[in-house]
Every structure is written in C-alpha cells, then in structure tokens.
Image (cartoon, rainbow, N blue to C red; front, side, top):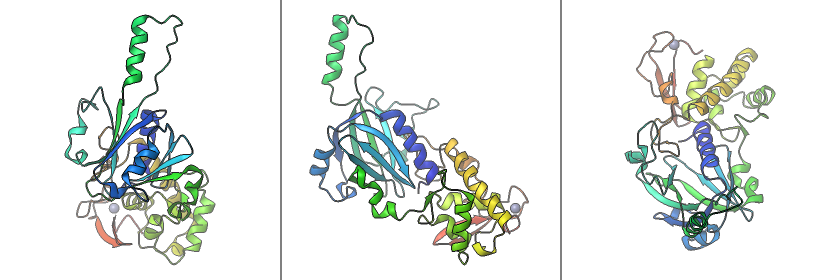
Length: 315
Ligand SMILES: [Zn+2]
C-alpha cells in the first residue's frame, strides 16, 4: 500500500501537472469505488469544477475543487493515478521509456477528463491565426486525462464539502502526520509513554497515533535506529527514542526525494516506479545477509503485517 512518501509524490505531481485545470468529463467502469453517489450524480457534480490544489492528510489525497467541493481519493492497495496528455497520448516518456505501457498501469477503472486554462497572449496585437488557434483551443473538450489504475479495485473516490474534510471520521481519527512540523520529539515521546506496553513495531504503523508510516518504512526506520520491532515502547530509552525520532523524518524525506518505493503496484503519475526500493536495507530481504553485519535478515508478523529486521544490529 502506498505510504506517506508515495502519496506525497503523487500529490506533488498532481499540483505540478493539473492545478488550474477544469474537469470536463468522467468515465468509470467500476462505479462501486464512488462512495455515497451514483455515477451519474457524481459526474454531474464534478464536471465544470476547477482544480484549485491537491493536498495530503496521512495516506489520503484531497483534490480541492472550485465551489467548495473536494475530491477525496484513497489509493488503498494497488491504486495509482496516471496523468496523460492528449497530445502525447500514451507516449509520455521518462528516461526514454514509456512506462504507461507497463502491465501494472493497464487496470484503468476511472478517467477524469481535464481541460487546461488557455493562457492569454502577452502580445497586445493578436494576429488572425492566433485568434483562430485560441478559438480552436476553446472548442476542445479535454487535453489531459487522469487515469485511475487499480488492479484490486479497493481504491475509493468520495466527493465531499471542502469545509467538512477534517470532520470525516477516517481523517478525524488520524494521529499526527509523520513529516508535519508539529510532530516534535516531545509529541513522539508522549505517544511512546502513553503506549508503553505496546511493541514499537505496532505503534509506528498505527495511523491513529502517527499518520503516514506503513509496512515498508517501519521496517526500514527500525533497522537504521537499531531497535527491534518487538521492543515495548516503555523499554526504549530516551537516547534511543531521540535516535528513532530522527530516523523517522530522515527516512521518509529521503523516500520522498526518491519518489517512493515500488515494491509492487505503486507508480507515479508518469507510470514510473519510485527509487527507494533500490536502497531498502531490510524490507522484503528475509534470508539475505544484513548489509552491516552479515547476519541473516528475519521476517516476522507483527500487527498482522510482515516486519523485517536484523536480529544482531537491532536490540
Ligand atoms: Zn545486522
């Protein structure tokens, strides 16, 4: 499942590529993903709205639209958004490769058709040809499409009132964001004190305590911090807590810089994989040698999900 770095990458891409565009049409082959509205009503309510900006809360994506409405998207297990321009069609290439052709990007369930705003010519004297071009541009129905690929069909789409976003039960329940400036060592320390009897491996993944960290990054953070996932929070010293807190920010920011981890379905809006899977140290490396000490990496299940660690480097 996409975690904070993957969702942040998508949000950054969306702001760069579609901010200011207007939704002109919508298509879906899986309307069940649209919560609380029929396909027809949903389509009617979003068409004509302008995209004002995109933001992230935890692992959730919010696309703010004109008229005080917000599209709430959750990618869940396998969802990812591909932004294609009509002109480039399926030939948008990254490093010379057309990632849209990859199998993982072929499970298109929904399409948002978009039209970019026409930029006014700076020149005061507009020639006849230019006027004609502008007219042509005004007549086009769309020039970009956001295609929502989702093999498992667990992703969800909800249209909500912008001022009600923070009141959504799943958002209200969220803990502090793992890369927010408000997430201080003091706050982290308080969480560990409050959850003294819980294993740290579970605390890090609990979205209602700290939002954004999932299965991949909890293993990586705990490895670099040298702490076993099974350690109870109450048994972790202040020095270790400080070290651990520092690594949460460092690992997540590094992962954002590398555009996330593609260990399975996650892809960015160009259809390209992230880069963090190339620098993973323990995640999905059970049976391989630890890069620091040559001990074999172990996999265990904590909180119903696999956790990977080095039994020697982590105490
Ligand atoms: Zn080791």
